Length: 225
Picture 1: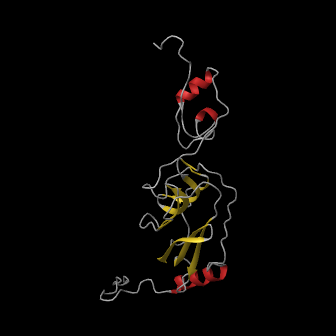
Picture 2 (picture 1 turned 180 degrees about the horizontal axis):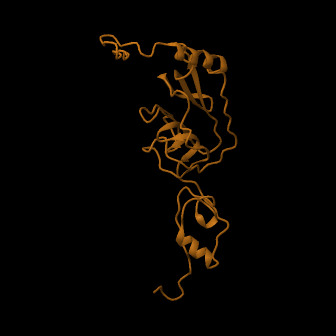
Picture 3 (picture 1 turned 120 degrees about the vertical axis):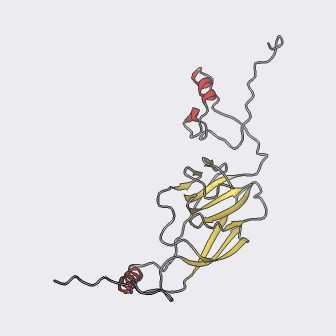
């Protein structure tokens, strides 16, 4: 039992949450105890917070565990991860965490087309923070065709599987404020003409040609009457 004349105070400690997180206010994270308290008529609809930790969480993601990419903050550090079909995960990451305030973070990938196949080419990715280069990696290839068509394109929260389970677990909600996001696809090698030429080359090649050192398959003689 509390001592006599003790103040009636309910202290709640939370981390990286807002009204969009708990189920009490329609969020994606189940909070049954808060739901019961709210059902009894006790709701706090305003609060004040002083940020003491580094900003974390997802900003822009497509795909997930089996292929895709994500642009997010890991321990406050801008991070861009490219998941190449769950085989490789090249990662661009700034050395220092962001300080409080406004920032402009850019990831630019310059494609280096080699060969006649119109997809899967490599290139150089550069991530910059407030106009200063933070990370640079050159890849010999990327993922052909498409990134994880069975998952979502998320802004501000990853609702599917993580592009890197070692970095975060879903649901992964961005705790800062996104004022503007710009996605510029630029010019790529994939066009109706390049795809038509590639399909024609595939359909006319000798698919039964034996590999070096391998005897060609024998075909049974046609039956005679």
